[in-house]
Amino acid sequence: MKKKRGVFLAGNWKMYNGPGAARSFLSKLVERVKSSQTIEKAIMEHRLVVALFPPALSLHVFREGKEMFPFLKYGTQNVHWEKEGAYTGEISVPMLQEMACDYAIIGHSERRQLFGETDIAVGKKVCACIAGGITPVLCVGETLEERERNSTFEVVERQLTEALKDVSPKDVLASLIVAYEPVWAIGTGKNARDEDAQDVCRHIRELLSRRFGEEAGEAVSILYGGSVKPGNVEGLLRQADIDGALIGGASLQVDSYLEIIEGALKVLA
Ligand code: PEP
Image (cartoon, rainbow, N blue to C red; front, side, top):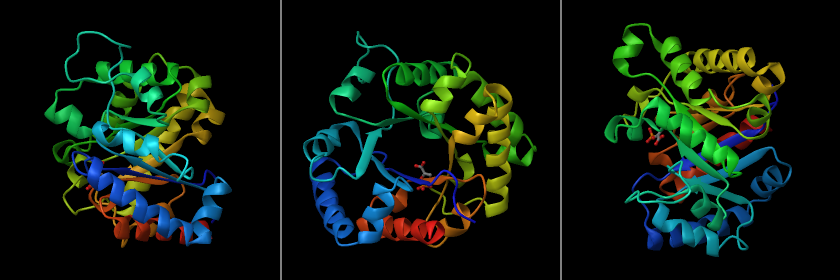
């Protein structure tokens, strides 16, 4: 089955790959992508998006190299909803615009769990991104305890409802990506089974369609994240409602990220 929405691959570098490591990663990646006509072709034909989310301090390396690798999209792992102000340690949407970012990851479970990010804060960040022309990659997903209590659908519904409460169908159509990331699968080496991930992603699409209309629900790319690796990416991407992957550990090395890209190409073939 051909992917309706193409495939979106997002590499979340978390707090790895500072400017020096980012520079060598990018030069190796550019060289390898340029020597593979299939990757470039799939990107040019808008069937594949390859994106990276480095730590904010490495963004300037992406900005400076943008002409060298126009095929590569990038963004941040977080952003504040205010444009500027006394918010020590934060970065804003205008700063992302200055760095020519395409996307921002919003509501990653590490931000929710380790930094106390609430559904309300996530909602404000989503709105600030959309208003500033940055596409939010909105993360939702249940903990192990919630899964064992059979509350997965309820949890993602609450997270989506809160995050998107001030968003219009037009915004959803033009600028939204959702990543389903079960918390118990992130960085653990234990990915969700293909069909379980598909069930939740289908549920997310149904929720979006119900709230924003079928056209918007069908247009949104829904990614799966949680221990995606070269060995499991193909099975996950073959699911009808999984349009891509959010990849942590396996996006840190050029070789494994490229193997994942190659797995996506097989699904697109
Ligand atoms: C993530 O960072 O969102 C993630 C899914 O990490 P990993 O692929 O390492 O589980």
